[in-house]
Length: 126
Image (cartoon, rainbow, N blue to C red; front, side):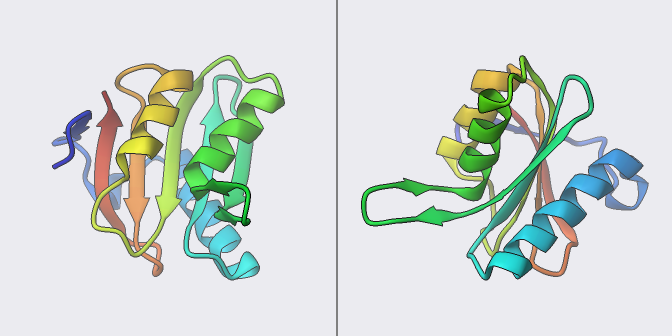
């Protein structure tokens, strides 16, 4: 497990909150719709969601989760309730956890699902 990540031991994938299922679905849709490596969604402190895909330009590279966090910040969000990323990865990237922690604070849930939408890792940004 990455440094800066603690696993949620009490999180049963079948018992996910409907709002958490929603951000996984939104992240999965962004990935498929845009044909990118990752899709992500974050929910801010007011319940608004921000959805993004990977940005891969010559001059700018952002993961989907970094992009979703940046969209939330640019829209005036003051905090995050949760984040989700859909990827082939086995665990969330350190830079993604850092971005979530920066806006949401330590302990913000980060859900990693596979392309099929099945939850792989439920972690907290530390």
